[in-house]
Image 1 (cartoon, rainbow, N blue to C red):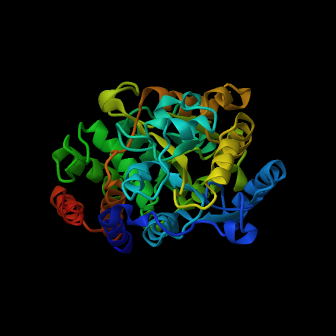
Image 2 (cartoon, rainbow, N blue to C red):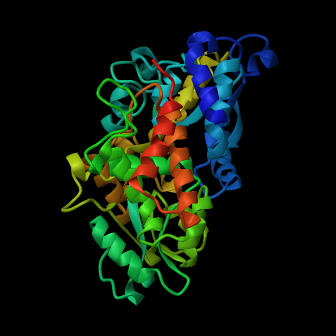
Length: 435
């Protein structure tokens, strides 16, 4: 609830955040361009320490090129949104920060982030360098983006080849009925068919958003008002919880799982399938070899992935934003230019197993692997952006928590009825700010 209260307060305060200082650099130099930037990076790798090891040499490279030192903090996902919202209210945040692309519109509404107008884009090489679908998740429709795309991702079905072979399953499931049938064959001997992360609010949202699309629904109506209790939204949440409650293909302990715990089970062979975005780097860090897993599109109700009810991923990714109250805006823009340059895009996205949102960097052969080919095709043909509404971050908290509570109920053996799901989603909708 703390996250929701802070978010509501931020949106009410609006542009009051545009005061104060985001960098300590000016105090060091006294005049001219500050020689220090603060950068909050999201946890993209298997651990905070791994991210520091990955990013530190790249930031040193930027310092050598510009003379500007970057003070790095890698922030866990569980803390990132709260930290950002607190920074927008206090006016004391970093100069540059990573944000989940789904938060772009909510954070844009605070007035704390630098708008990326034509002049700002001109300083980093131009807006047309970026893939359109990535830019579409960088802010509210009809406004200048609030951030610049940094890493692009999509969801896929990762499956354990040995587990499939041992169970006599010769191909990955293409529909949900096939996934449940495969999951039941694989859920035996202390092992489970599918892994979820019931305490991971963002992941909960990503999964039920896609399922809602497949049920012909959304969590907001055409006017931008919450529609959490529509038949399609309720059916989507129930379908997701039923993988544990009814289908019995998810371990009850997954109700308590947070970030990356289901990947650990998958790497150990305790779980045969996971629905994840760009998992390769983390799986390798847990000892898996790329030939041990396969990647396929996330299942759909019937047929093949595509537009309409066969959407099978949200448009996932990380954006790079600048606090407009930074006392080193020139340095911040230089840093964004560096991080979105072709060379850094190739280095960072190769390392993280993601896809460059910069068109020219995408052409590198490293992004034509079988894994990434599935993700690229998904982004191009069957992914949809989460609702681009100012209340998006509150939606993630409220509905993500409702899903978490329902998983806890399922783990304890409680029957998950349509009425119970609707009751929890009604409670979530009541927590949303009124317009």
